[in-house]
Image (cartoon, rainbow, N blue to C red; front, side):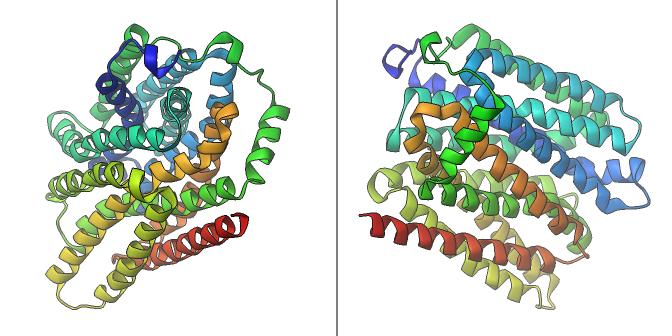
Length: 403
């Protein structure tokens, strides 16, 4: 199947992709308002451990990512999507029923494995049907719609907590997954023809990883994605405690998060407009340079004695952090996938697993370093963006040398 005979409009296809990608955002952001309640109930002796609910899901997602792409190359895209959604739903039920933090973390870990299906296979489907800057454009529009979910997820999570408890959020996860599966099953034909499927084996997975690693653009894109994910996961894990304990604005947190996420969604729209003219690498490098400067400013702002000025500086910095994700991740995916059309599923899995696991490993200590101020987060993100910016400048030098 090609984009020319896709039996749905491009608008519906983009909306479906956005919902698949939104599985991740909904699974993470809806939990943020629940962290204090979960910590008080299941981990009263160490409240910071509740942040592991975020990173455990991300870690599971990274582990699942390694296999979902190759499995979709072997068995087709739809069967892997539906299987992942089934695992996700079962573990959401376990999370709802759990009585200890360890059980919740275990459920979240395996939920992440199931969520890897929608995340990675959707990327492979887009690569099946589109390529180059057009692929980046489709990804940008999908991400633009996808950003509505982070905007409403904390508000929805808070509403569910108010009418039930934090356990009701896991019920919402199950309903969301069911809707996704029905939409896929009814409207999306299998995009990967049988004759184009690849046999699955660990040896081929390892061979694919080595093939990717020797390509400078792919290797650099993976490392930069890892650093951006570390900054993003560290920010998401820390943002609710900072609003609550640092600035005393826990009740306002879902509203601030929604407004910031909605404004940040314009980044994908802007990227879709600019990428055809300026190119993917240029936009990523420019975005990282701006974010590096703004992170340095945030470090300086933590020394200001006025708590209100600190808060508004942090809110603006949070906005820019989310905004520049929309200007980078889709472009980095497109940069890395461009020479890998012959192994799109495997490439998406290796790239996603590497960047997600590395990002989660780097983000976990960042979240646990929270000391009641925003300084550890600001310093950590400054370092991450500095390294990422340097890598993108190195990519440019490699391209110039090759040319």
